[in-house]
Each structure stands twice: as structure tokens, then as C-alpha cells.
Length: 220
Ligand code: NI
Image 1 (cartoon, helix red, strand yellow):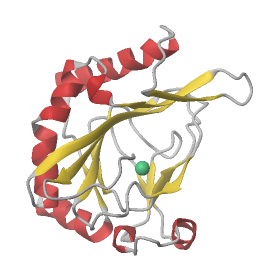
Image 2 (cartoon, helix red, strand yellow):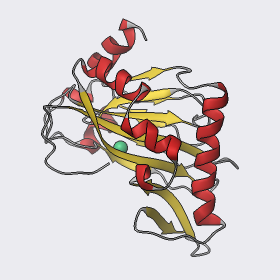
Image 3 (spheres, helix red, strand yellow):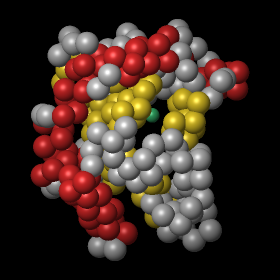
């Protein structure tokens, strides 16, 4: 990892670490992502951790988030949450010892995923103390609803108007390849558009906080 990633994160509120996961390890995460999604789509599994909405046309449930991802019976994903590469990366980026706090899978179902409205994950934490690491297991681009960020918005006041901030822009389209990790400060204003393709766009997201950060509430 280079200094430019740390500098970019601090200055703009986000950065992309390319090719962090590759080869057989990436294949394993992809397989686990598929398995967990199929539990819902094919197996009919339902739980309070599997967040869905009803498709406007058919009323069918559309999965969009698997919450408490580290508790869903995947040893490789639980391992990623507990220790290792991501902790090291988050610690380097925040410049402090870190702990993992939340894990989820974001699922953009082919042709059905809605846009994610512009938002900030958290505001009542200081800039550069809490970040989200998103491991993309599929390529993410404009067509399938890549992350979109407003640079430097992590430095805005806690009560900054999110709508006006993204309308004023600039908006940066954060595309990623499978195996890339997108890092963003939880204060950064971001959103994403619908998935208009025929393939899933999935990411494994883990939030990291510096060990001395106090998190007033848990959200994602
Ligand atoms: Ni978010």
C-alpha cells in the first residue's frame, strides 16, 4: 500500500486499493457471496439480517443487504472480520489501532436493485476515525451502480445538507474491479444508482473504528 492511498483518503474521504484480493482467495469470497445470496433466492431462507424490499412489478422480495455478515456461517468472512489483512489496511489508513465494528454484504440484484439514496454512514464521529472497507467481489461500474462520492465531504459539518452537497458536487464515480477495496470515511457523502445489468454487483463491507473512537449508534 502506498502513501498516496492514505493521503487520498485523508484529503478526499475515499480511496481505492486495487487488486488487494486475487486468485483463489477472491474465488473463495465470490463463492461464499453466491452461497449466502442463494440461501435467500433459492433456499427461501429469511431472517432479520437479510434485508429486502418488494419488487414494484411482482411483489417478489429483492435482497439488498445481509447484515451481521460475520454471523452467517461463513468461516472466511468471519475470519476477515476478526483479524488480518483488512485490519492492517484500516489501521494504516486511520493511522491508529482499529477494531472491526460492523459487517454486511451489499447486494445489487440484477435489474431490480434500487438506487441507494445519498447519505453519510455516520456523522457524530471525527473525520479520519471510522472508515468502511468495501471488498468488491464483482466488477462495479456505472451500469451496475458503482459507489458515488463527493470529495472532501467528510470534512463538512455534522449537520451539512446531504442533498445540497451532492447537487453542488463534484460527484466522483468510484468504479472498482473484483478484488479491489474501496475505503471511505463514514462521514463522506455517498450513494449509488440502480443495477441495470443482468449480473449481481456484490460487496463485503466492514466498518473499522480507531480503538478510542466512541460510536454513539450503529448503522451502515
Ligand atoms: Ni453508506
